[in-house]
Length: 289
Image (cartoon, rainbow, N blue to C red):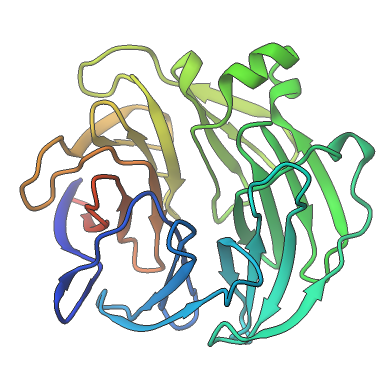
């Protein structure tokens, strides 16, 4: 298996400089939505990685993440990140124009301090993720809560350990498995829909070892990609959690990474890596030998 650097998300003037943004890739159109909450801006790119459109929050909400629905509408996650200011879900059209606030219902009482900064979806279910509290809510597009997960508690962590830990990365694969990483224990986890959990990874700085792990995604073959922020590499593991290879590496050359933070994957299997230092989003093609 090999990874080939393709390009960074760009405009006609060059690479779009941005830091640690959130991505959502429309499974129907292939369009890439990039939420940059620091700029209060959402950028839209075509499948070739060229910017085609942007929209702002008009000062009405702070978009930290979003998903694209099959009908073309967007659901935006707004979270001002200010104590006392509550998060919200907003339905918008494909241009980001406000359509309606989505009322949330059935939220468990122990999710009162819940403050999600990540939104993802799988087969019509929306997952709101509070990485710091290690909590996940599953809701319908109409806002009805269908399930809740306290991942820290499920791992037996104390409240203090949860506060000191937090999730490094989180995603849901095609099978409905939740994948997440815990930087403090140098582990990656795969939780099946029946809530059984598997883990892999060990501390170290050599290839295949974990230092500060962050983003994690899996493809349709069960191949798992894990990002190590400190080592600036994307590690590839097969479905048995055996290390295969890694790519990226710290540096400023084409395809190198600087303070990478998160991973995303489109329907063609391309891997998108967000990073700091205004390096934007790097895109790689994965080839299976």
